[in-house]
Image 1 (tube, helix red, strand yellow):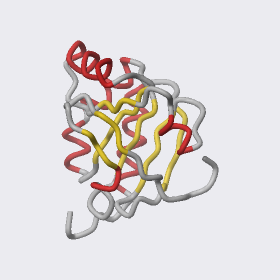
Image 2 (tube, helix red, strand yellow):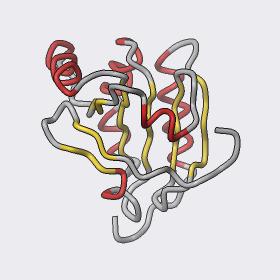
Image 3 (cartoon, helix red, strand yellow):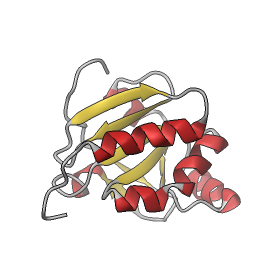
Image 4 (cartoon, one colour):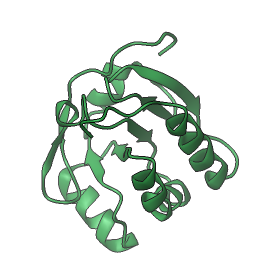
Length: 141
């Protein structure tokens, strides 16, 4: 993904047992989409859930895994971060990302930032929070 664009419509089963649809956030909250299944990254975003909440944004991790696997991972790691099942990497393909990365979209669903994961997961979380804090959130949120 090299240019700013709107996020594609997607829905996926989540570790919460619900199906999460991107459309349910458009016009309400910025989205922070984490394309990575590495435990340190997932834990770092999970640990920062209240910070993302304070920034009026929603992080979601999208994993190449089945619905059962994301539920088992969330339970086994005691995560509250919603993990979305993307067993054939269809969502990743729609976004056009090939490596582990974070995609930050504003409340209108327009992609504002894409950055590769690397280094300290806490730094990645801080970068995502900084990106979200630069955005204006709609009053209806």
